Length: 382
Figure 1: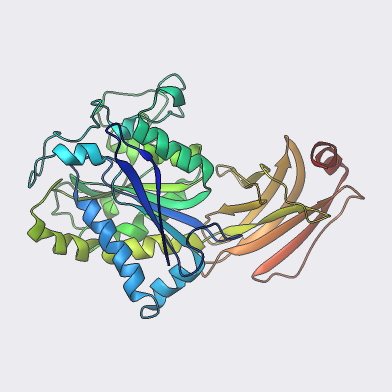
Figure 2: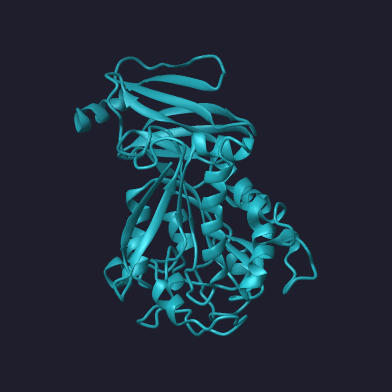
């Protein structure tokens, strides 16, 4: 049920450990099974998430077969958990320190949550200049098609969603207008799924008041090069930044309260990976079509994996889904999504005629897509 692996090393040579958890085949990807992840301790002095994520792993393993929600999550999803992204910073942090920045950075004094390429500011950061820790995480995101994830921080109590950056960056702690992303409504829903299942996040008496316990990143303060925005734009993954407590490094005696505050929210948030649509794009011979662009209405597009898989988290409703290969549209279909589970729409392309057909609405739909535009696909891929 577990598989432990390292995605790289810190500047001081410490492994960046990850534990993958699932009820079956935790050591490999299973076709159409969504990949999710939690990352903690990005800032070394924000230590609470280390304990939360270790306890979360224990919860998944000990409650499998006992708790219906956990059993379903384990049976249908692979969960990757990285308790610490910044082991070097954690190693020098001051215990029981609720504020301050000592230990926040890595050993090169770089803020790892400002070290990713920035969507709005292309010259801000390059992959070649990234630190070992953030570079390893970027490689991990690029090589694994995560569908839903979150990074954990401390010092506030709020669920933060994209964008963190904008086209007119301000100073580090300035307050600004929201920077709205194409999936804003879905992100607000996901953020509320965490905040309303947290015991205290929607309480206005905490360290700072956020309506519904959520905030758009840039509306709170503008931050360039964050892991959250990188996950969303470059990784095609819906990602939140979760601030889990007003104190960055509380006494160990407070950890049980933090755990009880966050436990249900950590489960319920990952269960939202079942929302929306997923499927496989293949040609008429059954060969998967990799790197096809999946566009659903005006949301941010995603791409198919080498196995032809795609996932898109959506709120319940009716949408137009388009598939393109090398900028040539090869499919355009109407899909329906529910709140119960992801609707499966498998798409098959062919180069004969000009016709689209689908099976009657059900949990699994296979679309046979015919059109002259798909001839380019055959020239390129067969």
